Image (spheres, rainbow, N blue to C red):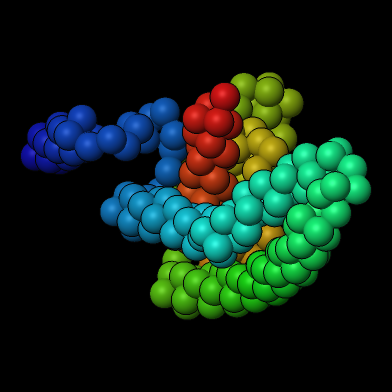
Length: 232
């Protein structure tokens, strides 16, 4: 009966992992995996990064008024140069155009200063939004590892040949560092993303914030590549 139950468990496990996008535990020996939450965090990170970039682009770009004034200034400078080339006979027209150029330049400087102030306000608002979003994600998944490695199912031939006694935590940590190098060596940010998770699991797991940040970073690089390709 025990053997039949064991075979049924194996068959059920194979069926489950064949019906999902998760790798089989024999490939990545994980003991915890929250696939739905990972997918949700990846989607949220993508949408959030897109919204942030659209908002930044809208506030950092020149307004239609500024573009019109810039074009009008270029036209006035061209007309003033043409009149100036005619000599003293076009002195009156030249003076009017030069005064118009000075007035338009002042208006353009004012519009540019307004845009710079708008950019500064946008940067502060985005910084506050990022901080608030990170705190919300951390609180929602406080102490929950999105994926954790099971060190008891890792077999290292080098360790076995040396007859060293290695704990499961050390095995899991070594496997994790090798699998995700150099992500696990990014220092304080990665440690913050694991805050609240059980200390014995921190060396071989990934937190919700790390998944969210990975989605933002990856989607950001995709957006940059798309912008460069479209601007060619």
